[in-house]
Length: 428
Image: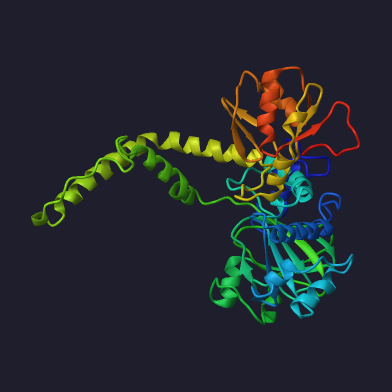
């Protein structure tokens, strides 16, 4: 998993970032670290165009848009903005102003990594570097864009719950204000967001001026708000490190208990329980259920570590194989790449390569690619073959390997280049 030539090196994450942020507890603005070739305002607007296209064609996508005027969520304007004709070249601001009927507006776009291959790959370089130097968030990363000429973030002065980087692409600058949680609560008397006129709070904030290519580190639980006087585009990259208790509660325990309390095979629901005597007032039923609960929890304690390992192995490989990005239900870019993959082109001499920023991971009889899992033969997808596919492999005349590559192509994570390329684009 290469971090790319422009991404911060390991020392940035182990030394520079902790030193400048008081061990990841204070915001800090890194100037000009995101090159325009990796991510830019035009790429974000193109991602919005893809969301609009999905709306027009009825294609499913997890990526969504929200329209705000001031701090008001305008759900009534969303169908109009999604369904209108294309904006003219260099005329996006005027196009939006005409649709919303206001001079100032803001768009919030979620899960751009699932609609924009350019942003998934470009910012994936930054994410890969972060994971190598800092660590892996169990829930992955997301791209959330803030687009507009709004005078203040539509969410008001609010708390960020996860560590995040706010990357900025202009063309205008953004003023960003931050407050430590303790200071904010002292100033306002609560942890609730502050809407409306919060001018008096700004003089107590730490102020940052974001210009194109900048990245602001925002630690978890820091209150913040962005303000600007001209149109600009920013993309936040939150790190979803869910609380351990939430992971156990939502995933590990339900999976383990379902296994331990599996029904008898004779019926879908298991063997019916006996009738409970009326005179007992339910005491017999409570004792029976209590005993079952106690024995199940005792058995669960003995299997807890293994259950955690199974869950983490699955989620870990899912996130890493997806380039660090969160796995979403309807990844439009992945679905289109999978549909475009032509298995008949998988022939000896064709070069097959994992599409950046994704990664092929093979563990035993499982292969993970772009967040998907497919069966694998470890005798075919050997460590050497896996490593070669991650960078580009000229396919040999090996029927089993060719079949494995065809199966992997269904994930949307492979790019094929024919041995004798024509003027056509490679299959992705």
